[in-house]
Image (cartoon, rainbow, N blue to C red; front, side, top):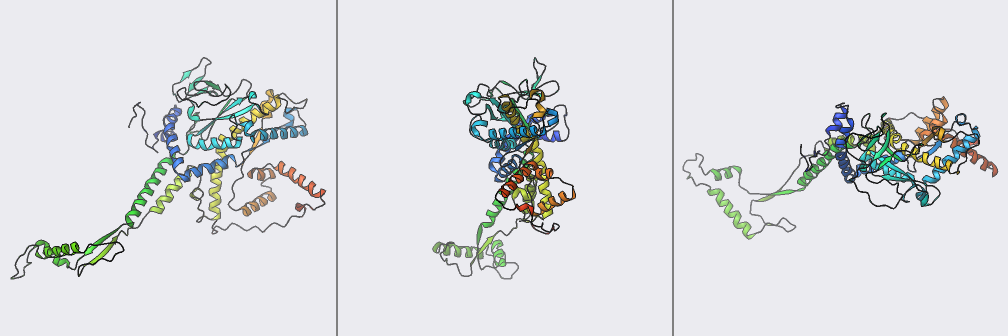
Length: 528
């Protein structure tokens, strides 16, 4: 294996033995060592892939939108009135206040972003797209009342590559373990993040609490307020605290696609070239006799070696000396009995379509997508096949959303809820239980994101209608699939009904149009 000047193994792009070792269960006592050994190589290769491949860049951006939603996730607080000593009306009112507080903070760059540049959904989208390269996202939570504004809570995205990469296990005075930049307690719970002191930070105006090199950063305060949030897109193995890009397995296929494309271009260029051959009127037999110079058993024939061939060549030389051959638009004169013949490659590009589709299919699998969704070509898909590939993609993206996006949103929500209640912006009812002693109960929340993409909107709506009528689905489950809260829908419908009645107009849903007849899916139907 090749080595760098510093003795670090050079890993060929797409060749990551550590990933294979983890998949096969090798060295289960130190999976973190295996992940760390190839993290930098995978990150560099995937970064190059995302930069140079429009398909990969588009797939990353699309996956980020599906996971984080085009407008981010919206909180749906779920307070238990009995657990918090609240009446149902008080719980509903508190839920509305908490939701509005978070939406107000998240939608204002000067309030949520420590740099004052982006809204919180945009920041999460940036972290998401970067996580496909690094496998993780890191956010620090600043408390900056001196910056002005309505909220003191500010979020700052931090490059995960700045976390220390040392594999030395250090035992701290508190009895904690420090390895790979992560400090854990005896139970394995993350308590602090350490940055590599050799990596310099750009100077940015901000609070002193901003993450600086070589400084230990606790993940939360003693009373539970988040300070740093490290979220993984996919956990490589049990017990591994750092992430690695899920696209590492796709690098080799991407390189093979490049080789296939380059080879195809070379073959096409070769086929576009034309070779011109000057054909004389000498027969093959005459040419052969001219080469060997024998009489071939003809009695009385004198052997005159190469006479015929030399005579012909001399004639051709004299001719083309006086008459230059021009293959452009000009008409060229040829010796009597001679002609020009064009020779062009006629070899077919066999196997290209199969290999190209196969490699793209494996590349798409790294994103949890089918070939059709990855390249945007559904011309060969039936309704059923497109629906099944859609379900598989959505299942993986939902899991990744719960793994990376939801923890970031939950940390932001916890900071805003605490600040709103402690600052008096939200006043708890008199008999409500203490926030800090019941922190988990106050921070119970569902997150609503982008609805699952539908192959056919009509058929999806018809299926939901049947499920609702037969009792296998509820308004809550159907609304959740669409990224909505059924209670919000009910409240909006009540508002709309009251508005129609105020204007003396009939409410449209009082006399709904009959539902369209439901036809079974046609597998022969080609999706557009």
